[in-house]
Image (cartoon, rainbow, N blue to C red):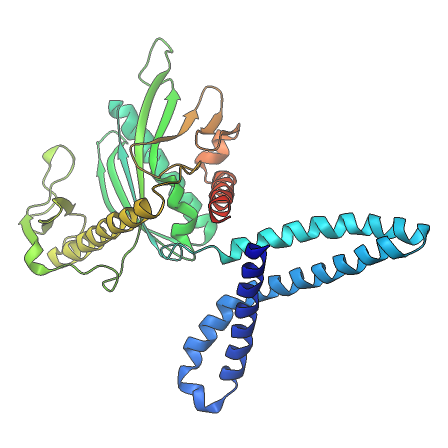
Length: 358
């Protein structure tokens, strides 16, 4: 009961704050603070609307419970029937309010840096990495996001050893953050004459794009090397030293960029990737400290963790974290079925965090 009282008091404080913000926004003397006040008001509005719906349902329940005790037989029966529906609605509203009160991942609204690398499996792994990269590109198009390749290191045979892209749009990181990990493919390679199924893998990393205010990088912590760009097999694609390699000395992280003909543009792109990787390291360290006692069913998002298997002979895709299998491999590779996995992963994460909060 004490917990219930504390929870109700918290809801009352949020409702009062919402009303206070509405009053402040209407005050001409606070016009200079309007943008800040409006942002907080907008963030609180869905929570306060859900609290109002919850309070209304609680009042209905109390009235129906009284009728169920005091009315005549027919009235009691009617009240009991309506009570069942109100109690179910209350459970759903209670969960909605608690979900809205969960701490938000500050990175959820950020753009993302996508990194796809070929893993075990040679050229077959590189071909799969290229297909995954294109799958995310198609998904981004479906979402109305901007997908800009930053660096592609191809094998010369259609595969990618490594491919990096910047994805910008609404809630990009929130939708893609659980894609980080090892993606395994099972199929018969085009070069396999005996029809034997091979297993290969590619690694995906999704990093929240960091602004300069998010992560401070000191010039003294960087070693910048410039060199001549080269294409597949060492073929020279540039006659000037425009390629850039940046080493972050404190962490040993190395980022290389050579897609642009301009050294300045290559450096800017490399810094963008480096900043995202450093921000993700910091974010993961905080998350590990905060969730040391929790084993999330969605997994850690660690890129060494096998998260999904794409079985081409059977036309199925299986996510091992939530034990979800869909026989929609063709749609998956077109980006059309990816939302089904993402929605399930987000729901599982929300349920785990709600359980932890109780």
